[in-house]
Length: 225
Image 1 (tube, rainbow, N blue to C red):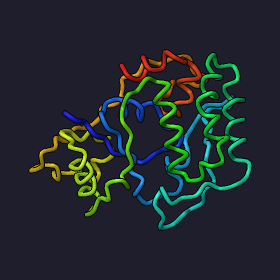
Image 2 (tube, helix red, strand yellow; image 1 turned 135 degrees about the horizontal axis):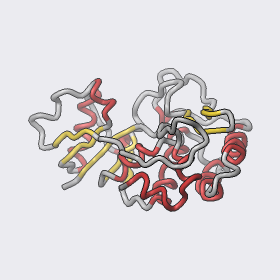
Image 3 (tube, one colour; image 1 turned 45 degrees about the vertical axis):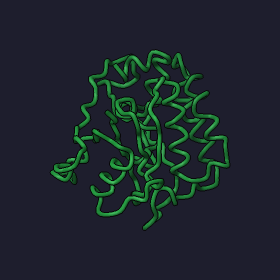
């Protein structure tokens, strides 16, 4: 049995993204998808003294480009984002764990595309959480057809027996997997235990940064069990 999930790489994703990764044998970054402005690919929320705060990579609109084609901008955004995380979570017990995970990626100027940047962060967070899933890129498989046909093509090439999809895909996946050898299953996120957080009511829908800053090595117990 081989469980596969396919998803675009997001910037500093929420904990459910990592629960999805951990539920699969192979996680495929859908790097051939068109980049969408003001979406999770280039921004996410953390928590600061004033509540929720967006951190956005200033990549612009990049109309007509896939996420793997989007170049990272120059400027101070890397150091600014690092400093924002450091400042907002200065009193969190495991802020150093977070900085140890993310700083090498922000400081590596050879990582110059949005896809590689997001993937590097996701892989490092996954390693910290003890996730053993294998990572691949959709561009390796040269998928053809419409949106769902491309997913099925990738699954077939990986020998998938199950395709695990996030619930948002119900907007465009209907019965296409019927008649294939692949079982379609829908991811059910959580439930996640609340922890001490500087906002009320508690929210799971913030970056993984928040969970690790609060729980450190215990984050895997919060997310993966």
